[in-house]
Length: 97
Length: 253
Image (cartoon, rainbow over the protein chains, first blue to last red):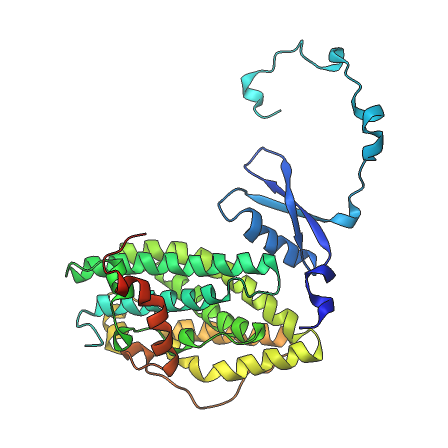
């Protein structure tokens, strides 16, 4: 096997797993794979082998754009309690919010 | 002894031994895959087959009623008592070679288990429910690799074809049937291996077409596994697999 097909040569994919019906897909980790179909299959074996999920998404890591960690202070340390909707009661029937 | 007198026990050992031996071959690949992801996959595949073997042996032990359990059936029988098809004992080669064996096995187990879901034997039908789901996933995995390698580079195509050609002479043993299957088929317990064979040929032909590979034509076929006559490779596999249990009889882990 030549060097260029070893794992360093395969693109990275971010894996999102939905644990159950009604829940959101949550980031689980990442896999290396040559294409999307293989990435989904690899994600199934790496992240749902103990029945952790009912659905998988994969996204090319290169397509994930992140906030600049250097600006985290300016962006996220902005605590304003009145912005939390703590004055509402959520009926139990609504389920996962 | 090699073939048990009770056809149901013989049938369960044929199905169980296929799974145990291919599980062992897959376990040999763990830590040797080109990718970490694929490494975890082969471990999963191996454990799926081991799980199927355990269910079949447990039921076999119950049917036999001789006080043997699944461990004794797996670890204390000799080469001539194993009734797996000779295909599954064939050693791993390069990745394409190993995937060729898995494709042949998976394309067999899917129609086999899908037929056994309707078995008149409730326990076999229940095991087949689990087996069918797993086998369909396994087939998706092996066929994807065979297609990717066959329709890949010149080198991957050459190696994939070489793997298929090398293992082809061991494939018909999967479908070897005798009085065991005939008798159990009459009572609706066993699967009709002719139907299974037809579906197998269809699947293999479709996958190889898509992979731009050629269906091997070698007419020589090596059979005998179903009556305990094996290729030399099983004789090497068993001591390694059974060593621990035979050194410490009755050990549990």
